[in-house]
Amino acid sequence: DLDLPCLIGEYNVTRATAGDPRRQADIVARFLAGAEEAGYMGTLLWSYDHPATESPFGLLRPDGAWKPAAKVMRDHSRR
Image (tube, rainbow, N blue to C red; front, side):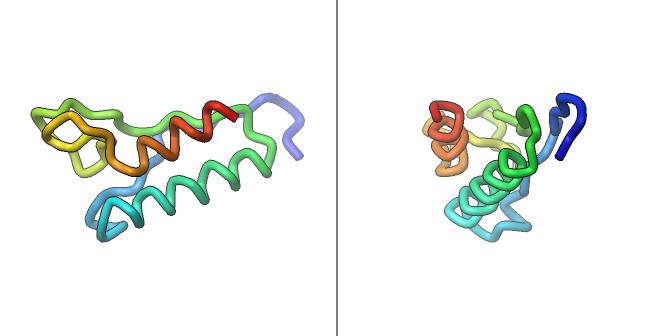
């Protein structure tokens, strides 16, 4: 248990590490569940991205559509 509110900042998994966008989403989902279970007040993902630059960490495809990990983040935040 955490005695004081604690926020995890700047986490993510790259495409190279995950291998593909679905695996990236699975890893993000497990991370979010683990952080919540451990009592963290929240998390900050690095980085959302800009569609023109498709970062290896980003949540957007070049056409601006959300990658699966972005949908995981959205759904987790609505709970």
